[in-house]
Image 1 (cartoon, one colour):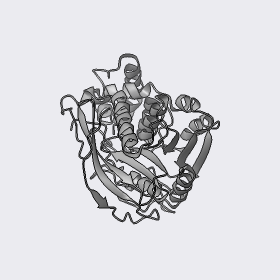
Image 2 (spheres, helix red, strand yellow; image 1 turned 90 degrees about the vertical axis):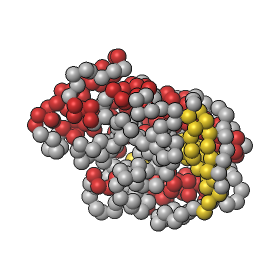
Image 3 (cartoon, one colour; image 1 turned 30 degrees about the horizontal axis):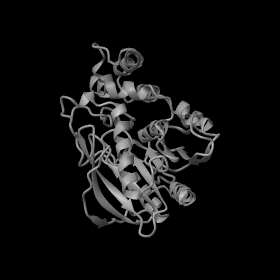
Amino acid sequence: MRNLRRWAGAVAVPILVLGGGATLAGTASAMPDTGSVILPSGEDTAVTFDADGSTFHGSLRLPNGATTGAALLLPGSGPTDRNGNQPGVASSDVLLRVADSLAAQGIASLRFDKIGAGDTGLGKFTADTVGEYGFVEQVDHAAAAADLLATRTGISTSDVLVLGHSEGGLTALALADRGIGDGFGLLQPLPMRYLDLLSAQLMAVAESGQLSPDQAEAVRTDVPRTVESLRTTGTVPADQHPLVAQLGLNEANAKFLAEADRLDPPALAADLAADTPVLLTCSDKDLNISCAQVDPLRRALEHTDLQFEHFATANHSLEELGPVPPSPADVVALFPVSAEFAVAINDWATRQAR
């Protein structure tokens, strides 16, 4: 597919880039062992739903006993599938593990392959039209998934939990702005305007020594003017350096980036009701988003029923790194789930069970 919000392959630093009615189908299957301290729980049933001319494929996780709540699980950036993976590029099972933890507390959950991922594929789009896909549509599709979850569980969309990983945190807050969700999990979330974060990440690449001097200077020069162009016209400059386009700031991603960048996570967080349960996480070993970057979002959530978790040994995908220094390779292999995150998500899920 044509540069559809993928992990950039030109450098070794992982970058957060692009990198209604429901039809039900499927049969139940036993859950695989994730090899983590979050034990498999409940059963998945394959489901489909239609939204905006595309058919989406997902997994409805039902607990073994009584259902005490329902949660919508939203993936991070790029062609990330329902489990939180980009096959051959990034593997973590982060959303599969969250589903396990929630099911153990009786909370049903729905996770799905978004546009560009898994069984959903490009949906109604083609390689030539995928640039027409925007963030607003991504939120629309998540809202349709919430409708399916409500239909299958009898729990209204205003009462479900919404948990988003990375970019999915912004999608979750956008749903909250539409009145969807009664509790939110913001897991290593995008904590600032989209293009501000991408700019910070790309500038870090320029200073990392992994690029030639000419390439580094091109990033320093072209990223600011590309961001300005996206914010003012929704397009990228015609004479943009090819490396900047390769790193994700390109015409294929322009609509998505411009729409996502209009939203400011701390501002959306400040609008949540005072009694809203929120789980917010960050980690010292997250190479994509630092705890310092998350801090303004944390402050914006102080009026809510906030459970803030500052981890020491988790990577961006909430896997356990332990004492090993983080490296770009940690986005590829499947590590055990972070022990810190396992405790935090299990505790939060226990408190949300009704």
